[in-house]
Length: 90
Image (tube, rainbow, N blue to C red; front, side):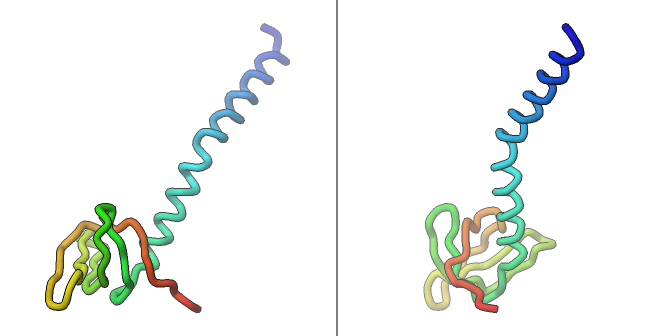
């Protein structure tokens, strides 16, 4: 193979790799930002579809508590929180 062909092949592989992995990198970045913005009092939804208010949050222990009814709380790991339903207005 000539040098020009190798360069074109390498550039094509880099381009294909970027197209494949870029959406994952963006999603991971959005998820990290979303988890960093979680606050006690936020209304959240778990990956199982349970909706409630965040009453306890400890990122070091990777734990949270969600109030799903008055006086009823469930303990979850942070990965179980899929999204925040309340919006933060700055």
